[in-house]
Amino acid sequence: MQRLTTKEKAIILAKELTKGIEKLQLPYSTLNEALTMAQEIIGKKLGRKFSPKAFAASILYLACKEQGYPILLKEICYAMGLNKKEMKRALLIYSTITQKIRKISKPSVNKYVERLVDLLGLGEKVKERAIQIVEDAKEKGLVAGRNPVSIAAAAVYYACKKLRIAITQKEIAAKAFITEATLRNRYKEIKELLGDNEVHRSRIKGSNLLLERA
Image (cartoon, rainbow, N blue to C red; front, side, top):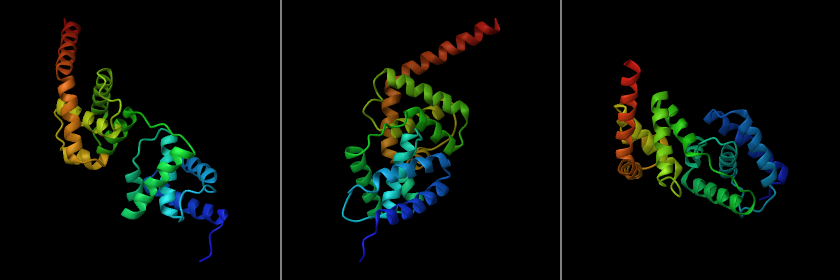
């Protein structure tokens, strides 16, 4: 079997990246970022076999992170129709790129909160409350070193509980691509850490409202 040239690989990648952008409804600025990355990376040796979908998924994930867009590699892989073997390959390519070629910073936990709330259609009140929960958790040292997606999901669930909005852990976990067990564990940690702080915050808010009405 004849090997593909770098130019041929770039053309195939561009097609896969475009499909991914359209399926995920991402902005075309992300496509431009991904294409630029592809040109930089395509000539590098990242394994024995060229897997177009796996390469495209990993590069698209990198482009999203570069732009601060909170999305998961697993989410991209599902949208682009990768099988389990290709998903593992995409993760390996991503790890190789970030270790040997290009360092990428992660989007903030707040970005993940905003996107998760939007995906669940929960509204601005939940978003504001969840972000405040995240900020309080940061002050207590809970966020550092933990998966930002699981912290965001737990904060959204906690915010819904506080605002008495009916939503299940299963619904949130599914949108965040984490297990219910992970969500439960992070929620328990945040609740134990911030329980008194949340009560105190509510009392202050209530006192301020009374003062405004007096």
